[in-house]
Image 1 (cartoon, rainbow, N blue to C red):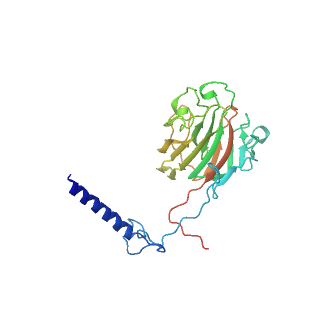
Image 2: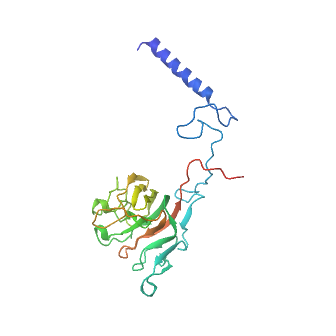
Image 3: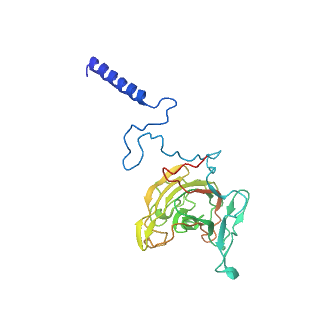
Length: 280
């Protein structure tokens, strides 16, 4: 390209950018009604009548719950959790019996899985966990627990630091289905973080209309991205769906009494687009 043509191209580009900037809303403008309609929506491009999203105040520090989160563990008690009773309490739901420490709680071996009192479907979930600092056992016998969305769909918790095991059973795996895309495990005893985006399956009677999907960020590393689940967690078999309610409790697994610790757990129900604005 000659110098003259190059200069002309630059001038045309600058003119197009200037024209676009000139057409953008000026200070004080709240939108336009003379713009095209968005496909399949009742809104113009930049429509001033389109509802604004609700204001959510972010946590003051990274990992802290935002203002609309349901805090499932605040470092003090397990009032948001319950367990299926054993022995004389068999068949009953009882208060959570896992051990509460200074800002964390820990599996109490033999008491069983922990369940939230409240039920959830689609959600954003933040969980921090630590395997025992003293390493005992190997493979699946080392710091094993699990985060089970809707009490069914497991994101594996395991000490995966220099710990060979089967790939679809290591930390952050969709257990028995998909290994994580990376292994950013911290050393035993150090705190790990899961940020999970979960889309619940939907059913029409016995028919599966939409499978579950999950995105998992493990210690800041994306290890699953909108991954389709084959069904609920199952051991040594191929997962398959069976119908269930649209919301079910979140579960934390007591796996043979492995002393896994948890802290800073919160959950959000995602909003839908274009919801009516709250009246002021």
